[in-house]
Length: 479
Image (cartoon, rainbow, N blue to C red; front, side, top):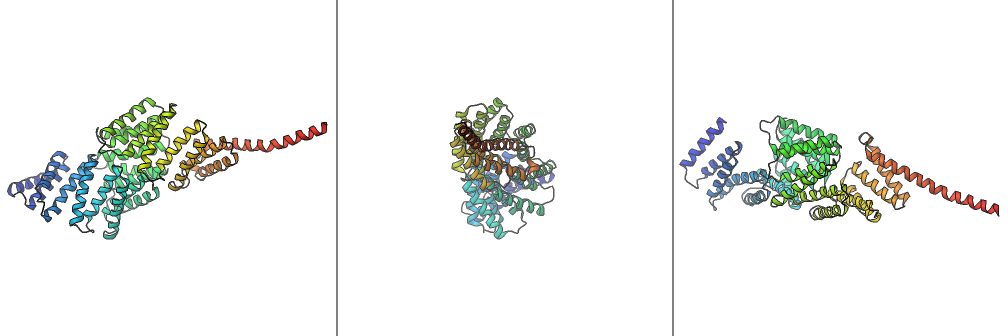
């Protein structure tokens, strides 16, 4: 703190002595902004950075390069505050400036592409995000050493972008690269390792590898808890990741506790509260707390409306999806179909056609048609979901077995018993391959019960002609 005070006094003396337009004034203002930012005086930091930007002479090339520092800091502060629209605009200004005056091997240019990619991702602009993230990685490979920390950040962010695009294998590959680089570059307790472990853990959660996911997320949490200054948003992200693992494992009460802690850590009007409310509402619905779940999801929609400039439309799709699921539980099938279709329209517009989130909606819509005995439409939705899962999920994934089972059950209800048996046996094989994971899973029992009924039906069908023939012989003898 003494160093900060000394540096601040020195910079203020420079400002008193130097005329406006002097390059050292820009340096002093930028340093003052850094000091204010590091000592949690955000408004003061903004003021120093803005003053530096305003004092920059528009035609002075040297000052333009220098002023990119406060512009970068202002954009970063807006991003951290959840002002994604403003941050994106500022990073675009910064990119234009640095593309003009910096060479392509300058790490500052690479960082700008990287930061802009994450801003665009938070806004739901997948095409723009992947373009900027891939550009950043291309420049890293060309100009930076393999163990450069900047490359680790770029690899991790590209993994996040691929994850949102449903390209799980590529996402895991890049997140593993990011963690490996950070481990080589940084001491074991460095805060950069928090993000690297957490990102990789989240990717393992998505493919159902909960043991690996939890190991990485707990590593992130351990490092986080030993930091001198814990970042509430970072801690919230780690708690959220652990909550998702627990939810996937069926440990709903524990997951609820973590999701509630996430909400406590995020400021009231921050756009990240939208997804936190959605996940909390979803778990409440799964636990049968329908009224509380619906109220929480309505809060998420309200906040999304208030944060339209900074929120991600894909988060709105998640909310509609969760509301539809709760309405299904309540027997409001028509309303559920309406909300599922709203979610589907957004995801089909913003995501690649073969995305796992689209497959999930196909499964939901198929289940409603199955419940209504509309087997033709149910089968169509389940088969479309299965086609996506074959592209996006690893072999042996629980959701693959679940969809296969739904297809088999639907075919059985349609009287296509032999086809149903094939599908159910495929579903059973998926679970038996990972018996240690799924030995006590309810889906395994459901598949076995369906196969048992199928076997009885086939046996009865084979016996029916023999009985008929016997009856005919007896009739002939009686004549």
